[in-house]
Image 1 (cartoon, one colour):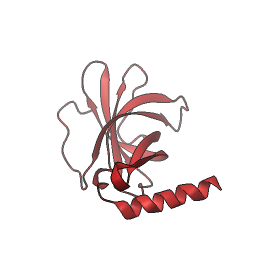
Image 2: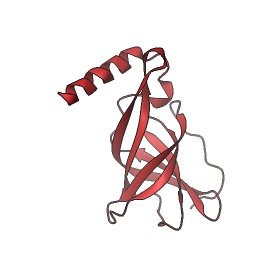
Image 3: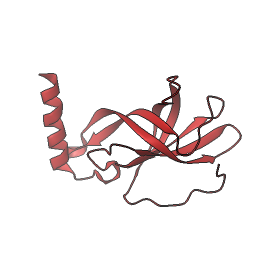
Length: 134
């Protein structure tokens, strides 16, 4: 388990955030809450308290989180996501908190950190959401 500063290997701009995330592994369906730190279309990083459970690199997990999708005139819609993935790295922040970097098996259909001015994507999202309500 790495305890040094994480290496920067990001291929797209990430959205920094401080939102809740829930996750569990395939063997134990006990849901654990963490705090989402940043997210891209392919991966996410979050922190969690180590007393909950110890996770390992390459371990399969499922994450559930909500995030805004920005659109016209500073408007936004909140979307819920559930993504299976794999733990890439785990970094010890202190005696109680670890930071997990995870890669999604199914990427998001937009780039969270590059949403400013993405009006076409937002209009498409609104159309998709309105179809779900009917």
